[in-house]
Image (tube, rainbow, N blue to C red; front, side, top):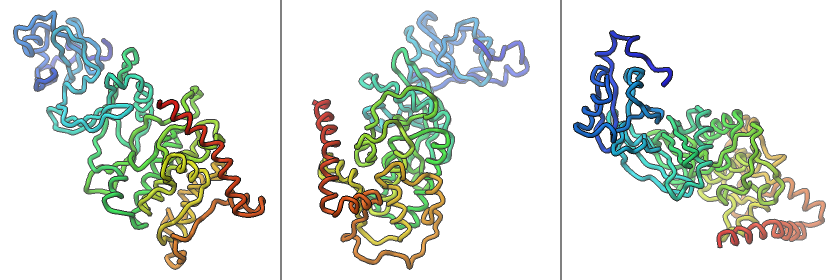
Length: 414
């Protein structure tokens, strides 16, 4: 074992320094170095008369400890003990924590709330259960990406263990107690512009940080934005299982059409986007802002096919009166042309984002009767000689692109 302090190096510290011994379903035990000077002494402390052949010791890196390794243990370190000859489970973190609540068991991973046996600190662990083994790469990628991201509006990753040979991964993460942004709007209704701006700026700040570090989230949505607690309006972005680290030269063979249908960008549906791009997060940002203000999604059909058509056509309705600057920003975020869609720097300098809103410049006609159309579609309508003709051609073109995708997805499900 390397990088450990030898007992011969710090003789004056022994009596004051302790090891904490963790055994599953047992309270932790604190011992001094003199008590842990031999394997037999340790076994007697934790197991009484148990045979040493059935007891195994592991360090905090899940590496097994043998008799000759004891002298190299770090002072104030940790030892994890298993009995009956078992290897340390990949969810070793549960040795020093009490499992409290199963938060969710999704398609990619299982999330559990845990509490430390000594400090009572609450955390969550995200791990792969037996039926989720094929999701290992997603969870492993999330761990590697989150390890690089340290931002006040991104969930903290405290540590992780990857076991590729067994397709197992365990992530130890911050526990966010305040619920999702989606639940908040559902409970409280559409937000006023001041609160929406405050929350939006936090999301924008985190997204700018991610993009500067070449991370594209790909599943940015209200469900994946959580409040730290119920007393503050500070939020954090979670769930980086679909995220992509660009600029690494690493091949990315996964399909582009992943994520949530209500947030999917039109360039994915049309097939115009050939590789992962930052513009996908910008579109999702527009959907989020729209929902914060109006309490509904901008494109939400009766079924997937109708939703796809609405997204591709890019026609936005505004259910109630809001500031002119906000309408302009939403239209730029939800621009169907990803090449001319607003960029992050321009969003940060936007008048609405900066709070430079003139209350007297509000559109006063009923928004239920108003449809705003993208510039690209507007120019197409003029060039093709009439609105109805353009819409019919656009609908037919999008049906030719989208419906095969829908049929393919249905076949895969069956």
